[in-house]
Figure 1 (cartoon, protein in one colour):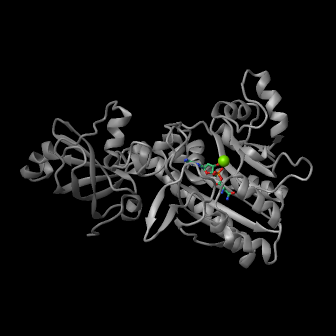
Figure 2 (cartoon, helix red, strand yellow; figure 1 turned 90 degrees about the vertical axis):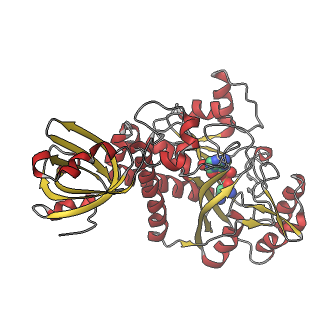
Figure 3 (cartoon, helix red, strand yellow; figure 1 turned 135 degrees about the horizontal axis):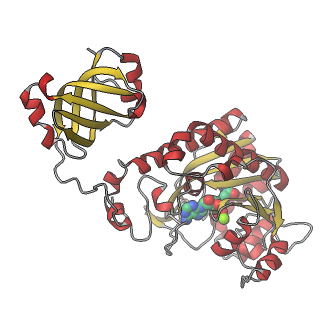
Amino acid sequence: MAQGVEIRGLGEHVGTVVTIRGWVQTTRVHGKVAFVVVRDGTGIVQGVVVQKEVAPELWQLFPELTLETSVHVTGMVRAEPRAPGGHELSVSDIRVVGPSPDYPIQPKEHGVDFLLDRRHLWLRSSQQRAIMRVRNEVEKSIVDFFYDRGFLRLDTPILTGAIGEGGAGLFEVEYFEQQAYLAQTGQLYAEAGAAALGKVYTFGPTFRAEKSKTRRHLTEFWMVEPEVAWADSDDNMRLQEDFVSYLVARALERCAEELKLLERDTAPLERVQPPFPRLEYSDAIPLLQQKGSEIHWGTDLGAADETVIGEMYDRPVFVTNYPKQAKAFYMKENPADPRTVLCDDLLAPEGYGEIIGGSQREDDLDRLVARIQEQGLPLASYEWYLDLRRYGSFPHSGFGLGVERTVGWITGRPHIRELIPFPRMLNRLYP
Ligand code: 4AD
Ligand code: MG
């Protein structure tokens, strides 16, 4: 008898007796036949108990098999095309491992705060499991994409002295006698890596002390940031459109079941193919104003503006060359219009907004120093970063893609809080 068989592998055990281990999802009793549905993380299976074929103790156990009770279930595997997963167990024994009286999350509508307070349990529900599977696939696709193209993964620090993006939204940490910050980005270190290794990427958690509550902002989120030596802003956008198209295609190919469970209309995702349209910031402003936006030249696009632009196209769209004052200090001045920088934001369609921010980097030492000072950042903490311009400066570009926003778009979920296992937001540090 096979012990501890995974539910997804039951097909290899048809006609034999196995024991599976998992959590009770539902039970039903129909006269002299009872059913128990069990989940183990690899799949779900229904066990069938026939009263006259089992010991009375097993039959009497049924009322104890409440939602999320952990169990060992032993039975003969039968092919059953109508059952979820295509198999059924003719149960001969059930052993309760851990009872679960009064499981707080019941199959009914719960408020989102109630669920977030119980995130450690909410993760067990079918939609949340599907989202985590898509996230897992996106993360694996990220690593595969860069590995296959000869990029080297460079893990960058989370405790940093130099401010990565700007003074707003920093988490300050006491670092012995010094002031440290949780990394807003790994980019500055990835730039050093690009000079050493050519094409690199960093992939990890990043932190922003976002004081506002929105459906797009976490205080801790995962970002992948490639950095490429000798690449200009156009090369950078070509890499982004190839990358995003690859992530979407992989999810469509390998997460069809999950997307179906989440009721995601996949037609808009099927259209995600390069090239993506490109729209200059300066051309976007009059378009937005015509549509009633109060935006004026010089400020960053708001969430509503991003939605409007995103809805003008059937695939993701690049908005390029923003005004200097709306963007971070490290972006390269645009020679064609020095009021702007060589950068792009990639906006997802269907109202999902910015998923990528990218730019060519300022490689001129004097201009970079001036930008750091203009933004009131402490020059001394950037001495090491300025060395990259002092010793063999080189054109280079890179970008950052937010994992949660990307998974939100792919799965069609409107709020970022569901897209990471344990969200960190303004008012949420537990569980
Ligand atoms: O546009 P951002 O701020 O760019 C950077 O951090 C650059 N250093 C990237 C680079 O060039 N290497 O952030 C990049 C992406 C955004 O487009 C968004 O997807 C995500 O990171 N992001 C957030 N996701 C969730 N919550 C937040 N508070 C986020 N802030 C940014
Ligand atoms: Mg951005």
